[in-house]
Image 1: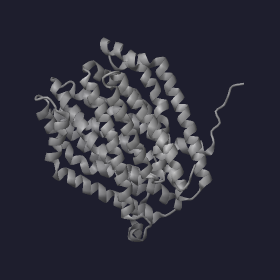
Image 2 (image 1 turned 90 degrees about the horizontal axis):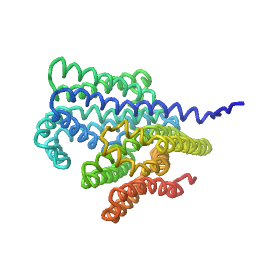
Image 3 (image 1 turned 90 degrees about the vertical axis):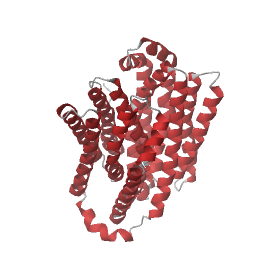
Image 4 (image 1 turned 135 degrees about the vertical axis):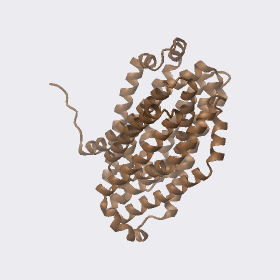
Length: 438
């Protein structure tokens, strides 16, 4: 008799939030591939480099302000659990206000920002002018992008990831169509790709506002009640500060990992880039369950429903184990095949086989951190997230520096795996300090 997978009501609620988020995550690299395909047919490698540099700049800048999404989702989920609609509105409006203030600062300070980022990335002379053109156009999309961060976090807190998925897909479609029309129709080259990005960002914002009004039209009637809401601006700033500093730790690790690999030569840099794609594939799925932790953990925390909170936590870790086993098996059995799909460079393929076992360890090392990040965001225990990231970052640098001359790239990957594991370990130990010891 065949075995049947039995899903509980909690599992169904988790999957209702996780699956749309996974779909949204998968659309991101697809868009990047289309952009590369467009500039890849412009007749010069400098165009590819310019879009790559420009995209890297904005990915890094916007990553620093990811607290606009994470901070909004946790507090909104708690307000949802308390059935406190005025607080839900207050959180959204305050998050949008912070987003607009940051976006304004980015536009006003765009010249020193560009100079700093170009100094860090150091584009070649043939790429720099084109990357400058890309930057000067795309910077004007900052208000839309940061507002979308706030809205996406709010939708997740409201237990709805279908809307962010819809926005993401429509935004990507607009980006592709607009870029094709501007590049091939008006022959605008890099300017066309950049303008297509900005058009897509504001189109995404327009769709988000339309969906907000359609699904939550009551929010306008509650605006006068915002001042009586139980969420203070100080609480938002504290949560956002902790998440921002935690993100700086992540950026510091990623920058060092990339630069340390680059110092070992083009082959090692390429190998590490390819292997990081395996981590990204895993993260696309685990992020979905982390979002479920944000939404459901915050909801039950806000409702003071300890039993539902604990049940959700246990089921989330159950899903984490299942996803970890699936990806570990896939990487052990098919890692070489995946690398071959990502690159046809013989030397990169051969070198990747030497380091591939480290990729086998990544899912097991990183799974707990994903789930705990979602839970910590949901219950707004952001100090625990910051402490775990700081300890893990210190561990990463200690191992990477100590083993640089003896283990080389193996030492770098040892540091990366330890960094992921320490984050999850510290969060597991820290949770006992929160209001609901597990």
